[in-house]
Image (cartoon, rainbow, N blue to C red):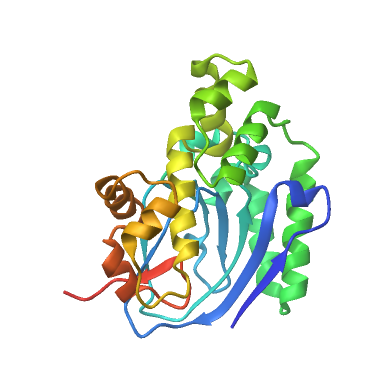
Length: 259
């Protein structure tokens, strides 16, 4: 069973999209490919597997997870750029990487794990996570307003915005803007734009059984089919037709077919 809690209360809602918890996640296949979202995640095991605890940096490619055994986890999905105040380092250093929470937060990460293991209700565990993050938010660095402007503009346009026009409006040099954006979001702005377009495709075909890929590509801002297929393969790890065949109940998870 999986539970979600959307974060709506300030100040945490500015940085965190939702908490989630899954207990006894079991699949008939041995592995799944998880697609990139452009967000940073904190993922903590609720079993006796502390080595599975990770802060997963923003990713530009999919990762494969083992689903051959029952899984129980609790996690935080940060908003784009939302993890920066909590991590104490440039988020770009974690691109396509996962690190142990203890490397970032020391003994407090181990205390967090112990508290979560001793709690037994989803609401109690979510409250523990919220307290942990709020304690760190009070000591956090401020985000650059140009980065938030860029995130909002790219999100509103679903990846169609021009990075050059965004840079011009921020008043920063292109070099400084790109470096600051990557430091706070974890990806270069052009990659973030491409990923936003890809996410738009995934959302558009959520319930579709058959898809006119040319129509989808055009509607989602791709100017030609080769460009669309290239981006889809890069971010999904499979072709568009294979994605339809292999997707699971979660649009962000694709089963890995045995060879």
